[in-house]
Image (cartoon, rainbow, N blue to C red; front, side, top):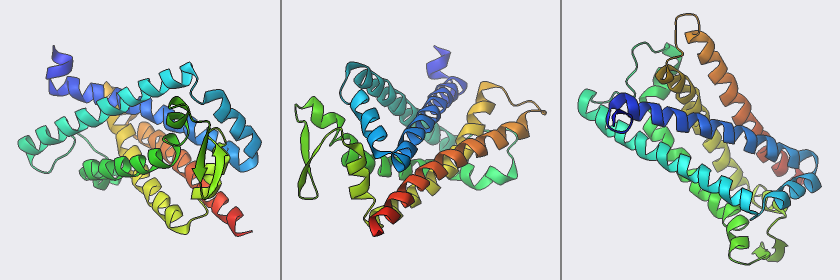
Length: 228
């Protein structure tokens, strides 16, 4: 089947899964920003999600998309290295402004994945996963807190300056990964005519900037709150 075996098919699968993950990041960022303005509202959102069947189903779909994206990115990276050395993504015309990120997409992806594992360990593992294991409270900083008290987790972790700095580094790597990834995905799908080429690049930059600035805003805001 060409979709699974051909180079174009693999790029298409990676591109579609990548765009799906971008939409999730936009939703996740918007949800987190809520915590800055109302911790009660954020906790209510967490309780609506929690380990309910629709949240678990959504998590499984998200995990599948993430695994597909990672696996196909590895396959394409190995394929491209074998065919053209250091060229990570096969594109015919590439704006100069995304040259660096395009040449380092795999490394940027590894950084993003590494910090995602940290994020999962700090939040998902102690919230949804704990609930699935039958726990409704978990130890956090010497106190027992509800697994649905998401704001408490944010306040706890983002009061640590080291964790804050690490997350900010993650957002920078994510920004570079998204700026090229969005544009590359659009090109792979075929929406890259001469009129829209630059437009998609700008749209991709806007998406990446909004997402990463939103996450950074939450991180910095809660750190500053911890100093008061």
